[in-house]
Length: 255
Image 1: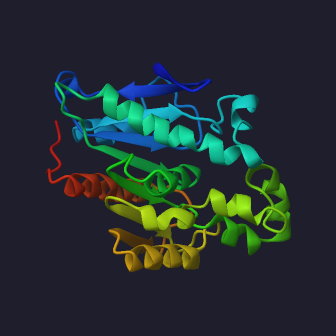
Image 2: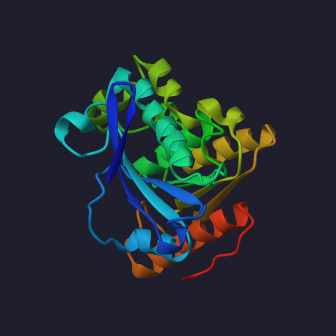
Image 3: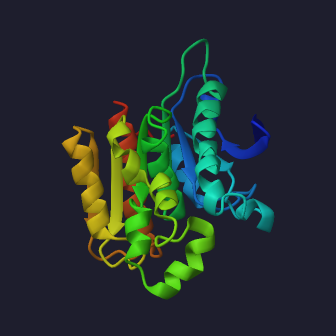
């Protein structure tokens, strides 16, 4: 566990480093999921550590570490709180540089964390070298505008009301900044996912490609919102690890 200062905010991170990367430059994956990472073994980092990646899990504002921290990015505070994503990317690049050589830094997330991955690649373009977002909403304004009324009301405190605060929702939506995108970005969505809009994702990809950005979209027909079955977990993580390895020109090497 480490931490750094971002203005008046202290951001903690759980950092896992494979032994071969203790004294050499290795690529880093920064993983966002909206929760506080436990200081114990977990199967997800193991995939990346064995493939030669350093795995970092930041605890940024909005993560469910405690009630106050979870509410720290609600509503009008969210645009400023999103700058934590940029600050984490910058910290990690400096933290794992060796002898003047900086590592490649990727951003990854599922669902809520997938949105953060998209924000990192668009609003804060250039902070991360590549990104992979799974089950993520690309356009929060469009999503909530077309969502059922009970869902809009339930999430208005956290995200804003599309009827009265369209500017807020647009300011925190990845599609607003898609023209800034730098580096390769991959999206993966489940065809049976009731919590994301496939049409919004398609609009995001089309807009990115219209600006000649490198972005791909994979829709897995049988998948829902989050991985549940072992075969789904292996399928998704295999694609994620291969994507980052291919993006940076190095093969996957298990240790």
